[in-house]
Each structure stands twice: as structure tokens, then as C-alpha cells.
Image (cartoon, rainbow, N blue to C red; front, side, top):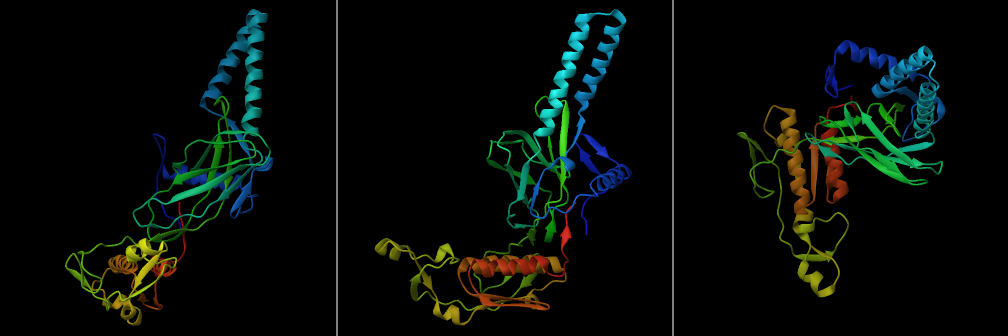
Length: 340
């Protein structure tokens, strides 16, 4: 499923729907021989394109006028200046095209975000031909990165802030890597189909600040879940994923090692976050409340489980369990979708 508006903007110009569709069809026709890139791609000559920019076309018109004037007046100095500028433009074309060739582009993992937050797509540009790369720009739709510089034999990371996406699993659409180095008279670009997963959690619906075992209220609707709060009666060593607010700082000061407070009764009777216990008819409201409760239960350090229609995650604790629960909420009832 592709998401997006019927119209998109390019600078101050708004593309009409028919022009956008025609442009997309033309790009698909041009890139039909390109295979899907997966998570990494390397720019070769058969996938790099180059055309003059607006300034380049203006220079061509000026050079044509200079050439006609030189022929008309048989002025050798005018001929010399005209052909000198043509030579400079020809060298600029060679440098612009070479600025892309041999680049290796790799997608980096995208941090999950909550609905309403812009995901950050990160790409790594790496030089494989031992030469510097200047003014590299990555765009996805109407979103672009800052110009990047890659030192010879090194790599640089670029970030593109995508549009806000609804909850679910998304895959970025076609990317465009371009450069106008060195004079801005020509633009060389390539189309990429790098794939990565963008996970968007439901937006948490923060309710009244109450203990984990109490009621959560939002807009007159109430979400209930079972929980037993145990008193911290055990000290154990820190394990990755333990909530920071359960660290026993006095024990840390005495021993120099990390310890956390553990609750034996809480471990024996975990909390259950249940879809059926959330009052309301809007599924997105229910998912938002459950997302808030998952975050709250994880912060308390108490084991908890999650029940959704057709899906159940047993009680556990830690970052991995929290992420599994949030992923289940993000993908509940939805197929994987592609961004536009």
C-alpha cells in the first residue's frame, strides 16, 4: 500500500496529479533494467544520469550567442573565449559524473518512532575509489538531506527526515542520490531502491498520572488492567534491560557495582495488559492506551504480559520484551506498507 497525497511540492512549484503520474511512469521505464538494491548498492556507469541544470542551459544559450557573434564578426579573441568556456563546461561535466561513480551506499537501521514523529532514515556513503566526493544530496520524495562530503577512502552518514507516518511497518520508496559539483552547471544523479524497515508504534495516549495498578482515564473512557504491586524486598545485580529507576544507589555506592531492587511478589503475579479491559470503540484509542501502559509497566520494572485479539505475549520484563509488545501493537491488524 502506498501512502501519500495526490500532489507533491518541489521547491515552490506544485506538481499536478497528472504530471506526477507521468513522471513516475517515466522513471520506472528508465530504471526498469535496474535490480532491487537490497540494503547496499554501488554506483556504476550504467545507472548514473547527467543533464544540465537551469544555469547550465543558460550558459549554453550564452555560448551559442557568443559563437554566432564570433562567426559574424570573425573575431579570433571571441572564438578563443567561447571555446575556452566550452572546455571548462566539458571538464565540469566529467567531474560531475565522476563524483558519483564508485560510491557505495548502505542503509543503516532506523530507530522505531511513535506515530506523529518523523522517522530518520540514515544512509552511509562510502568512497571505494580513493577520491574525495563533494556536495552529495539524498532525497526521498520531497524530503532531502544536508549536502555530504566523503573523504578519500572514508565514509559519511546522511540523514533524511521523512514525513510523519501512521503506525505499522513501512519501507521507504525510491531514493535519489545527486550532485552538482563542481560548478552547478550540471546535475548527475542515480535512482536507488535501498530497502529498510521503518517501524512506527502507536502514539501513546497519556492518561492521568496514577500508579500502575490503578485506572487510566482519557476523554471519559477508562482502561483497566490487573496488577499486583510488590514491595522491593530483594537486591540483585543489574541485568541489561532493567529499569533505571530500580537501581539501588546505596548498594552501588557501597560496592561500586550496579544493583537493582527486585520484587518477589511482583515477579510472581505479573500485570496483564488486556485489549478487552480497555473501554472504547476506537481501535486506535485502545492501541494508544495499551502503548502508554506498556511504557509505564516497563518503567516500573514489573513483569507484564499483553493480550490482543488473536495474539498473546506472556509475562516478562526488559527492553526486548517491551519492544516485542510495542511491535505487536504497531502491526496489529495491518499489513506491511510502503511510504510514498
